Length: 127
Image 1 (tube, rainbow, N blue to C red):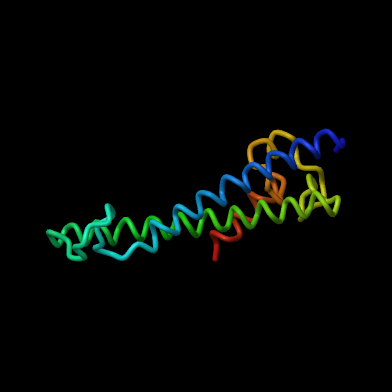
Image 2 (cartoon, rainbow, N blue to C red):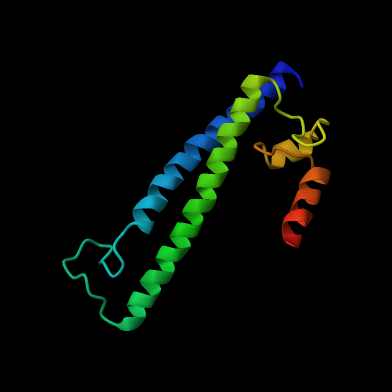
């Protein structure tokens, strides 16, 4: 991989890291809002209707799931930046072959080529 390509992926990963950091902050605020609290800052902590409480609980669950997913992606982005520094970025962690540019463009933080990622996914689904 050329220095220009490495620089390109470093910029993409840094931009993704910055965006994810902001998203995580917003998701944390949403997920950690007390259930039943008025999002507009009103004084009432009691929902008007039991269905409102159920909707709040559902929204909290969705926010927590998104937060976990975004946190995982942020960790992968940070690891990918480390692989750039180590000189191993763009090589499959499993078979050590070069990861195709198309895959890196689609998922710049990937550790695996498509074949190895597919094998890992199938092995995980069997458990």
